[in-house]
Length: 594
Image (cartoon, rainbow, N blue to C red; front, side):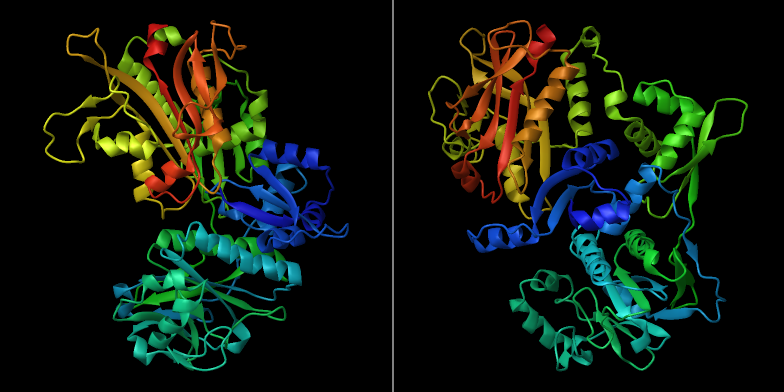
């Protein structure tokens, strides 16, 4: 999940209240976020530079807070503080409005048809009479970076440009031209460059070189001009120096170019709703008309709320708590969703108005989830899964698939055949000649052995997708095969579940918590070591695919049914995985037998 770094004192000032660390952690938990780390800027710098200096007492405390990946409104101090104030009942959800100006006097941006070849969409807005201080200015810049790395998918889907409107003159044009015809002074530079020259310059720039591939092989590059042919930006690479914003900027022009119009609208809404707070007319945004070739036009941003009706019975049934309509409406208002009882007669519904800050609310299940958060997960009574209802292995598989998927893991299906090297050497294992089924006369070196572990497919998948955004969370429910002299065919299928977590840290605790959840769903209690009435975990170091002392055996009713642990660095290297990884694998058939 994304992590937002905010100054503790600035955050408490915005909340209008101070907290002990313990109390703030409790507030975060209740709201569905997590205080991940407490540090200081100087400590971060010391860590990056590998310095051993002692900390000063006057260093500003930084809170690193994990927020849900789809809550883009929480990616900055302003949005986070506002959400927590509303959650605490200190204020209501703001009403965002568009400035009341005629269409004739509205700023316009004309989109040329050539942009359809490279980046076809643009949406814009203006923040008038804004007052930045150093903290809000830095937050404004940091939010753009967070959005670029998150919903914008490293600028491939959306790129944000912000400009000092007082240095420009509308109307604007959004064009696509050959790179040799684009000439301007880019941000943080002092001389003119052609766009194709810039591509060469930025190949050595640590920050910008990762975006060059988006347009560098295109015959035309997107570019935005004002009416005097001043370049605003060369999206998605760099803005022009002429219109760069500063602490003294009073009117900010925001443009978002995109290959995905829906995401562009979300990004623009996130920017303007968070920082219209600092405008003279609070929460008011000036719209811009986007005019396409052929006469089609749209007004952006779109700040209107949209409504949905959610059955009260659906909310109560899904959460497992009987709630009244007034109570549900009150809980939703704490989550920035305006809600009220629907019209009487028939089934009772809750009318919900979703503000432009809550782009994550798409379905009644999202409303139900917010009710559960506001109600408090710890206040929901625990219920045990009725395991007697599971009458077949297929039903058990379906149950586990659903449960693991609900924990954020993506299901994969991998080949049951693999190479001899993959099944043994690449996992740091040796062939004991009594476990693996070897294929006689294989057609390919890739299909020499019937796999004895599911983790193999997950590691290969992560290795082939190592450049995808982290964390990568995968699972599979399928068969492995082992030699078995008691069977007529000499081998037996073993149905297993495996789950893998790969990210900036090993995620060992996440894999452990997934095991606990699976066992809870199976109505299996955690018991002391040696007790055969439930399950327990036991420290282990014999599995060579895991780090020693960072692995555990899973014992269910006295029998070993699986393992979990942190994957050994040599195994990660064998599969070309640069990030740490943890794996859970267990047999699921013992649950059916029980």
